[in-house]
Image (cartoon, rainbow, N blue to C red; front, side, top):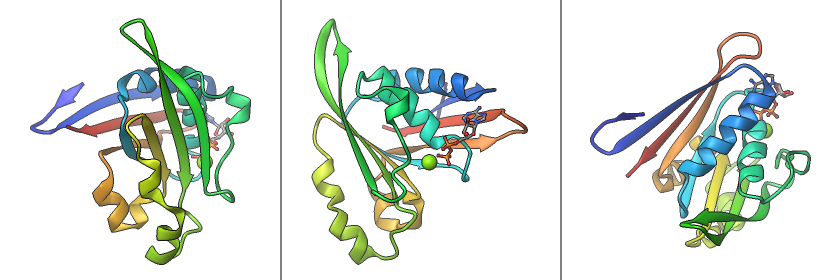
Length: 158
Ligand SMILES: Nc1ncnc2c1ncn2[C@@H]1O[C@H](COP(=O)(O)OP(=O)(O)O)[C@@H](O)[C@H]1O
Ligand SMILES: [Mg+2]
């Protein structure tokens, strides 16, 4: 972990889809709700694969059940986190704003309603909108580093 004044950076490497799911498990442990993060990376970088791992770790969905919210825009999963031996509910939201064209369409999604005390919101293509960037508490970036290798960076603002 690298720490600057107000940014904590966690770096991961993956060499397969399976390893990316394992990285998702580790990232899930680092995400204390409420969290609203941008999930960045090119098509095929592995963003949805990473969410499969995060959802599995939160006991919110099996990896097979997690698909891209390209057309549905928002996928919602109900899970739990174990905190000091106690199970606490958590809501995982996976959004894809690729098809959203303007702030008016964005408003109709009702992003604000998703941000409850127990929610983890992961937004693909969120960087398209200044209002979403402003709201985000950091990002997860996935980069292809050749073949099946991926560099995964979690940057969290305090
Ligand atoms: N290290 C890796 N991490 C994630 N996906 C990988 C990796 N290596 C190969 N892949 C493959 O790349 C594709 C990534 O797809 P997906 O997770 O849907 O990406 P995105 O959501 O970023 O478009 C999958 O077919 C997956 O099997
Ligand atoms: Mg995807």
